[in-house]
Length: 428
Image (cartoon, rainbow, N blue to C red; front, side, top):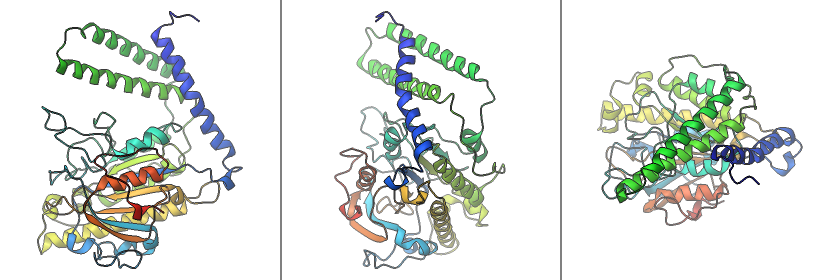
């Protein structure tokens, strides 16, 4: 064995070794999914959808005295009536470290302590969807997809709902047309040029690492920590390059829907993003998605005059009526997504809904309230007990819900964020 093998060749070699099982798995699923239908070979998937600003507390939450399966949907949740046996509404959860009433998404999936790093006024940790992506994203072209609305009032800092293992924001896309092309349009660049581009990127990374190592000596602890973080970022890029290389020869899936019309906003924008979510799952292009829904453009598409910020600070009158109308529309849209997941069939005859876990909600309850985060769970991907209304003890960590989902999807993790344990009432 030549011990002088260059680092770049080593990376290429390990990339091939890592990629090969993934390709074999993908090929196996495409070739043998029908034959193995009886064994339940359909993969698990998950979707997280955040609404930024909260809900109308007077009309969204079901009556807290009626729990279990024998409960009545509230006014705001009424459009979900046809799916009541397939949804679970959870009350009582919060993120203990949350203190920003306009940040509905920043810590929603992480449960992180904003001040956990001395000297920083903003720190975060890995989001639940990215923990899923680390396991379920190995065998798909895209480990995960992050989608954004055209406006993001109420969501807070971040580039999407997703945060990586270092607590750094993961970029998202807000143009349905671009999402469509990313998923289904073949690259115009010849294979050789794409291979050359990856090789060139590796060369740049090699040069950067070499320069970084030259300045390592004699640094202060803070500078050393910064450099370590920088090196981790480089390693993350290397991982993505390895994955890109492993999929170079694999054609993209055929699109099961037409290219979206450009310029869609509000309700129509959310509908097409939902269609793209289903298409991405249906074609196994990814198994993990997150989506920050728009607020202001949704209100405008419903001909509601108050701004999304003012609606979130409602009082009886026009603002409150707009808030209630927004809630009903969110429920209508969630019901529509459930319809589509149920109507999309797997190779074994089951539905996409049977293998997809969906979470819907916000880190904000309403107005400036940060307790009792509105939470809806649906889908069969996490082995959760659906068709019930849960009222958990006040200030139960929301991360207990995410931990229950993660473990229900077969992900071996003992805790997430500030979790204190699973929610046993959620376990099927």
